Length: 233
Ligand code: XBP
Ligand code: MG
Image 1: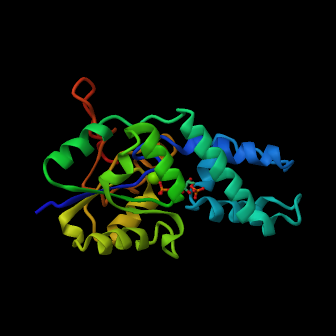
Image 2 (image 1 turned 180 degrees about the vertical axis):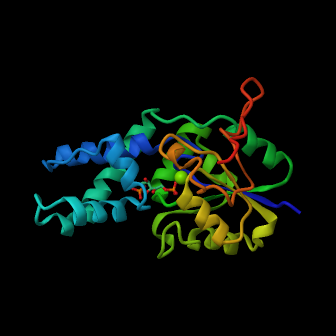
């Protein structure tokens, strides 16, 4: 029987990637680095999951101009996390359609809620608090985030961590994802997965990236704005 719902955060629970991008760019400007990640570049960079890993990849591939910067990834990323948390606390994020309703209805039906994300724990807590209220973190049986596992999505590790912590088999859960990387991670952990493509993953529709999903839908829908099936996703 179904026992738990496991949610990705970025792109699935909320369209947060524009805020991550803005936080990175604000930090680059603050510390005087001559970089600005525009939407097209950031879409490509999102193939590398994890902010620190993304920064390391960018430095390795683009950053001839800033020789000592590779040693400062942790410092830059900490500043980015602080900037992101401030944006979220300022009310910059909304939940995607249907998320609040589904979480509430799942709890009412006796299901557990969990999170499996690549982003850092403080970012998850800030988002849940700002969108679902101060008690929101306590509604989740497990929050698997960031560096709690060695290998980030598309590796299954974070989903495996969450399943182990709940002592549930994957067949007793459904995962919610927005991206190809996320779907690969969830499926590799054996999870049935529903995909709701987001601003930064819409280009993956029609590439076969979501073939392995239970279904691909526009969003989780609200009574006044029902979701749409995305055929051939
Ligand atoms: C989200 C990510 C994250 C965020 C940045 O992937 O890749 O890296 O962009 O978060 P997913 P941090 O939705 O698949 O979890 O900077 O905190 O790593
Ligand atoms: Mg995501």
